[in-house]
Image (cartoon, rainbow, N blue to C red):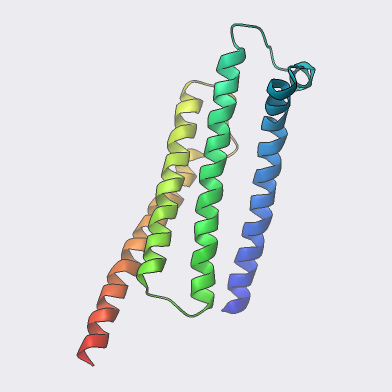
Length: 159
């Protein structure tokens, strides 16, 4: 079981590195342009920039960065859950809270990307339906773990 958890954590780490790379490659030129006042780095992104749409594109990219932060937080919560499982702490309130919080962050991520995709602003990398399915599954397992920890506590009291 530890081997499977280690493999999951390894793939989670790889996925986080890929997400960070994508986020930094798309957002770093904006930070550099605003900090230095030189907008030539944004021209490399091949955006149709003018005075009218600069603020809109900056806000959209900032919201995308926030959505990346949400998915990273949910992955870190899931990693903490895996560490607890690896340590043989299965049915605890902490595990249920981790899964439920991860589902909330994934739901907010899907909601932000749904709004951005509805506005038809640069389609995103993940399908919102898949993310919502994962979020609902995580929430369901969190609820199951919460009930199991309550039953475990009751069982410990009766013995």
